Structure formats: structure tokens, C-alpha cells
Length: 270
Ligand code: DGL
Image (cartoon, rainbow, N blue to C red; front, side, top):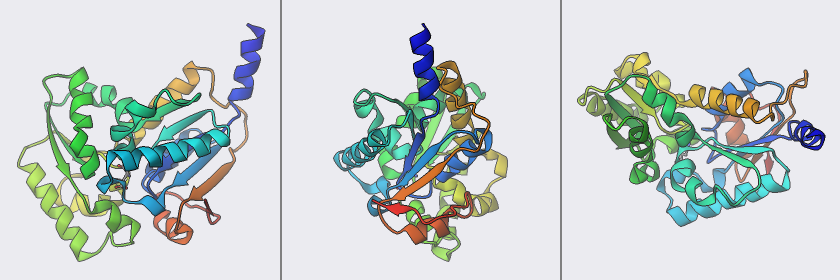
């Protein structure tokens, strides 16, 4: 008993790893830091392989494994897959390959999302996520009656990562997708890619803000409650340490991150 308490006491000070193809996961990370500022964290943005949405399952698997191997070397206590595409395509395969907890965004949020009484739900996500129907499958596990309308948005991540979120091309693309989705009369539209909250200004030109559901908040609450239950929450009363890594383009990462998070030092390229 004493021994396991000691181990838990050590584990809780270890960092949590977060990853995404780029700045998208910072929409989750920023919320996490707000509610759990004590946690030590490491963020990895896989900019060299961005966008994930157009990659095959095998390519995505090798991206996930490379990043999880890196986090294993860093001795993390858990990894947050702050990427819907990786959660949809690789989580079920890699979930038992590592000795730390792995939190996938879609599977962690599905129950709470399906509890918010909804009959019709729209989902905007990457092509790879939509091809798996992961949102539909996970939501219908908890509410078989729910109707799910899924739309792939193949270019949205690249607009954001290339600093083109305000371009005419992006605005036209977003407006067309929103208008078409609204024809289904959804109660909510899930932003099923962590990059899409970066487009909120444009999205809300074509539909009311409260129709859009960014799973980040639900996700962060889920992680907090699970860390608490497993005795892994870092309750040390000081601000957590942060490390940022990318696989390419550190300057672009810092610049595009700004809307959600101030990355104060250039990330290390690995
Ligand atoms: N932001 C990621 C997601 O949540 C990946 C986007 C991409 O690289 O295509 O799906």
C-alpha cells in the first residue's frame, strides 16, 4: 500500500505529452493549461507531416508511433491525442503498445456529447476522420437514435497552417460547407478537427456561434477527472514546466499558434 502511494506520488510530477499535426492541438492545450496550470507538459506539432487528413492509415500509424516513442523516452505519465484524425485512425491499434495512459479526443468526448440532448448532429472533420465514421460510431454507441451528418473539409487545416485563414478562398470554402450543412437542420455542428476553432470568426458569419461544438472543453474536463481518479493529478502549487517540439517550421508554428496560445520560445525541431 505504502509502496503504491509512493509510486503515485512520483508519477504525478511527470509531464503529460500532447500531440497534433500542427497548431490545432493548442486549442486543447490552451484550455488544459488554464484549468491545470500545475501540470508539466510537452507539446509536439508534426508540421513536417501536416496535413494528417490526407494521409493513409499506415502513414498515420507510423506518425503516431514515432511521436509516442518520443514521449516514452521523455518519461511522460500520459499522452493526450489532441488530434481527431489520429484518434480516429490509430488509437484502437496503438492503445496497448505503451505503458502510459493515452487519451484520444473522440472516444473521450463521445459520451458527454451524446448526453447533450441532440437528435441531429453535424460533424466537420478531415477526410481521414470522416472515412472512419468515428464520430458517428462513437456517438451512436451511447445514443443509437442520433442522426450524424459528416462532412470532410480537406483544405481547412492547410489554410490555417499556411496563414490563409482570412483568405477569400478559405472564406468561400467555409461558407459553402456551413450553408450545405445547415440544410440538415442540425442541433449542433461538432468541430471534429482541433484546427477548426481557428476558423470561428468565419464560421460564425454563416451560423450562430452556439451551434458549433468544440470538444476541447469536454475533453479537458475528462482528462482532469481521470487524472484525479487515478491519483495522477499534479497538485504541486507551482506553475508547470513547458516544452515545445515540432518536426519542421518552428517560426510558422509560433506565428500561427498566437490565436490560442503564446509560445514564448522557438520550439525545438526533432
Ligand atoms: N488537427 C488534426 C485533427 O484534429 C489534424 C488535421 C490535419 O493535419 O489534417 O484532426
